[in-house]
Figure (cartoon, rainbow, N blue to C red):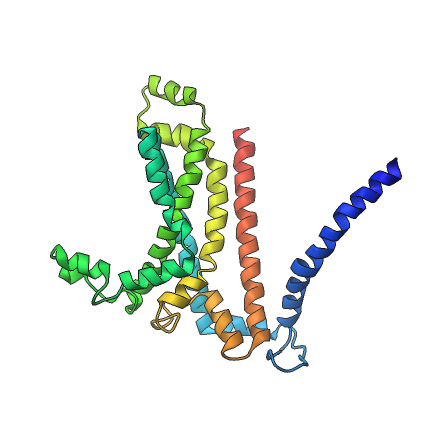
Length: 296
């Protein structure tokens, strides 16, 4: 009986483990190895160069611009998206059920579109001559605020971040609404009896009890902020411009590999991005675990 159980477990686990090693772990291992070579993507042979590719990353001004922009994205996109998502989800809790459901569908609508379609649509919105944004500003007499949003270095990254927030916030409104609806109504009623206002109720009751959802949202949005390749590739001039204002690591990696044929160097960028993403996820999850232990 025991032998039969082990055979069943091995038969169920081994194929899954083999598939995971072949299709998940081996590409990672291959990328790590290529990052230590000068492989061009065409030649069959790759010379081992050690950590030279990683040393070059430290002096690559374009890569450092990309790191800076990704850090700005990481600092702004998750915080703004989570802030708007929590605000709208909290407002929906006070609205009639039918109206709240309608708003959730409207907020969730961008999730039905691919990021490529969203980037194309917002490219039209940002068009300096015929775009919806500048046309709206001119219509209300704010001609001085109209500008070439994607062509001016001071505004291009902000325009990209606005698109990332707009495309993500609806999903997190729905996520936070579900988490808030899971909070016992008695807690809100007790807070109201104690004289707590909406802000105090949100800060003392709602936010601590949806903390895990916020933590998951931060991890996912952080990963999206460290990527941002599709939006930058489609929307920006260059792409990555103007003057590297919207350059991101994924963009540098793609250009280095497929335009310059430096797959070894591009692999080093990919490995650096992998460890940055892994570090972000680990720190966010450990911070959430520490907060749960303190609350317990």
